[in-house]
Amino acid sequence: MSSPTEQSTTAPPIPPTPPDDNACCQSGCVMCVYDLYQEELDRHRLALAAWQARHEAGAGR
Image (cartoon, rainbow, N blue to C red):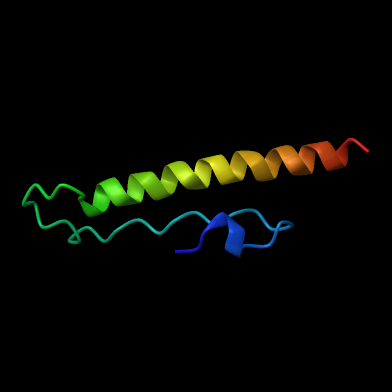
């Protein structure tokens, strides 16, 4: 999965790939794959909002 700094500033950030349905072992892990995915999704939403703000500001010129 790529971080916002690894992506081009002109392309929108790529959303994280959801874990496979069988990726969770159902053992109550402290950091479940679904928790990790949610953190990645939260980072993506922030990066997307920042990208959209940059492009909206540029479009107003």
